[in-house]
Amino acid sequence: MKVLVAVKRVIDYNVKIRVKPDNSDVDLTNVKMAMNPFCEIAVEEAVRLKEKGVATEVVAVTVGPKAAQEQLRTALALGADRAIHVETDERVESLGAAKALAKLVEEEQPGLVILGKQAIDTDNNQTGQMLAALTGLPQGTFASEVVIDNDKAQVTREIDGGLQTIELSLPAIVTTDLRLNEPRYAKLPDIMKAKKKPMDVKTPAELGIEVASKVKLLKVEPPAERQGGVKVGSVDELVDKLKNEAKVIS
Image (tube, rainbow, N blue to C red; front, side, top):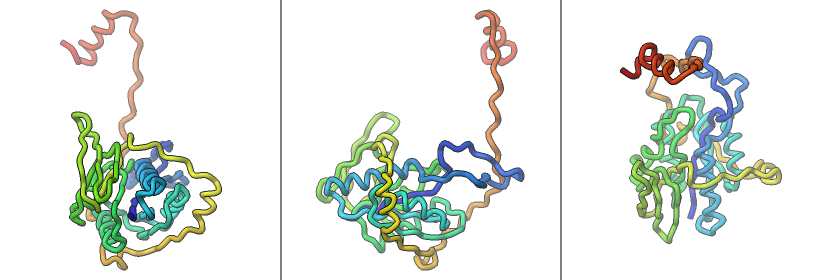
């Protein structure tokens, strides 16, 4: 079984986000970029399926600028067999990414597609669901456990009320949640080997699609800075401030 796993290039989660002075966008100047953490979980799950003998090939895919090949090489170092890069300098929203992935699903015919449930830059949580709609494949979102048995996949989902286990007929689409696994670190020998693994570069035009965003970004603003707190000398003073200054009690 072939597994297609999608990855996205985002600002490293340890980096403090800066906004451009004109509020036109996030400032990416000299900012460390990395693979989206949920995508790391997706890659790890795909590689584990291969190690178990369930998957025969893991194909990493990304849609984005040329620099995103760095994240594909990371996926290859983590255990993916080959990579496909849909190269574009356009701002790619969820639907554009889903369209590109749908075309690759049509070409590659994977038995399973694994994506992170969301990206930490946009937090949309849409691409997996849109991909399922475009391809007509069953989906299991927010997966905390995936078990493949012949032509079926049992997916345990994290929902508000607890855990829900569903059964999907393969091929299917799964989006990963935090507790699915603990991603491994790439070893230096694997990083070196990844440089020689095949990477196919395509364009949206070659796939017969457009990925340009239909959403116009008007303005980006940082969140309001948190105000400093104050110390009080007694419970009575605290109650007085809550009642008369914060007015959160009456």
